[in-house]
Length: 239
Ligand SMILES: *Cc1c(COP(=O)(O)O)cnc(C)c1O
Image 1 (tube, rainbow, N blue to C red):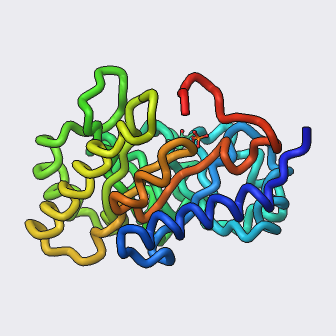
Image 2 (image 1 turned 90 degrees about the vertical axis):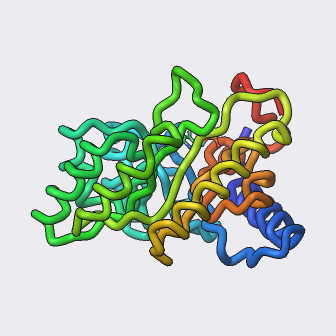
Image 3 (image 1 turned 180 degrees about the vertical axis):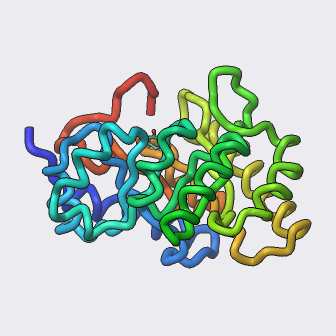
C-alpha cells in the first residue's frame, strides 16, 4: 500500500505542536528530522513536498545514494548513527549536524576534517542514560571531562545531547530517561555557561510525544512518517 507521506507528516507536526503546547513550550522550538534509512532517495522528493527540511541518516553507505538525488540539497542533513573515525571524511562535507558523538576521538576527528574544509560541524554528545550495555553513548559521569576537551576544538560546535530510549512496552515508560537527559543538559549548561549548548535530540516514532513534553528540540522519526495508511509501527516495539 502507498504511504501517504503528506498526511503522516501533518499528523506528526500536529502531535509535536500539541505536546509542546501541553507543556507550555514553543512548537517552533522542535525540529522534525525525517529519518530516511529504510528508503531509497526517491523518498526525498515526497518528504520535501510535504514540508520536511531536516533529514537524518544513520549509515554513510545508505546516505551516499541519497546525495545523488537533486532533492538532497533541499535538506539540512543530520548524521545519527555510530561513527568510526575513518568515516568522518565522508560525513563532514555533507552533514551539518552529528548527533551520535560517543567518543572523544570522534569529536577530534570531525574537528580535523572540518578544519580542512573550512567548515564547522554542530555536534551532540550521545548519552547512554539508562546504562544499557549494548547501547552506544557516554555514561553520564564521563560527560564533564569530555565536554572540557570538546570545548577546546574550534571546528566542532557542541550544541547539546542526544539519547535513544530503551525498548519499552509503553511510550510513557521512556519519560524518566528523557527527563533525565533534560536535567543533565540544564546542569551542564549552568556549569559551562554556553547558551548555544541547548539542543536535546530525543524521541522516535513511538515516543516523540513524550520526548517533546520533556523538552526535546529535535525528534528523529522514520517509520511513522513513511508507513502506509492502516499500517502499524510494529518492528519489535509494542505501542
Ligand atoms: C532509525 C533511527 C531513528 C528513527 O527510528 P523510527 O523508530 O523509525 O522512528 C531515530 N534515531 C536513530 C539513531 C535511528 O537509528
